[in-house]
Image 1 (cartoon, rainbow, N blue to C red):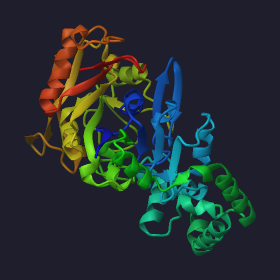
Image 2 (image 1 turned 90 degrees about the vertical axis):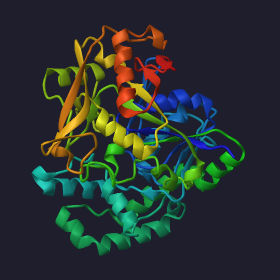
Image 3 (image 1 turned 135 degrees about the vertical axis):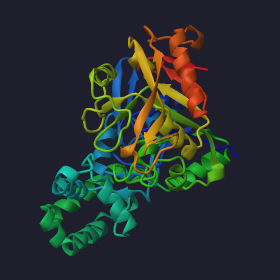
Length: 416
């Protein structure tokens, strides 16, 4: 039996997973999303055209690939329908798990209201209702995509939920919809989505049993994992490679090659510890050149130097076999580039990620910069200093770099 390969983000998300999945997807029969929701954003550039995907797997740009939205994803029908409208002839190419939980409009209202109440202690969520949807799932009060096939029954259940939670909703200022309006909305969702709702676990199993090539597409990044990330400044799902198993119905033996996606520098959206953040001109330069604004929220990303300590930690959690190093070209023209090789922590030098990462100070190694790597397609043609930078990352993390992106375009990728 063939195993499924996995692409996973190894930093705080926004590493460039969409481009790698789009590029590798040409070699696969099926591409699957396993967790997260429309808080995730994958940007793909093809022939100068920008595609921003939030729920639909990146393989949708290839006509012969089956795309799966797994049970671990939380699905906003409204967002999904809007996203699907960008593409033609999706039947038979896109399937949504009947076990995936529904993210409805009241979830985002709850999310935003709770963030407002936290004031200065707000986590900095995307406000898309992802956390409240997962909270409903864990408390066993959520509703699943398969329930859309019976809109009247789902409407009754939701109205009962609204009545039960009315005191909480009133306190938060959450507007409860009228029953007739809600029913019409659910009927519209059924009309569009019914042909795509399926038992996706069986579909993935069948593909593997038939020796089809399956690629799993992670969302966000390992350092945002609900258990192993910089809690509480994390997302609400397991973003590590093991989350792909629970989010699709696979067992660990069915995972093959793990490709860890890393930027040549580091970015983070929202609040939370970020040891290598550069709040000066270098960070501003990375943001400007790298166009570091969120695909989902449009928020400016915080930028800083490559952190080999956190990447090594995340790579161990994920079982990374090889790296895809993205946006190397953004560092073109820097006279000096830095890599964090250790932390100063409580008066000691450490090479691991402490739970209270906010108390860690980076210890940098400086390397000479380079002129330009943009568009280079062979490793040996890269400037010597760029190769030295890549090889030092490999030495510090213990993982080889197998793919190097030298521009946003699909074709500008070095394969070693």
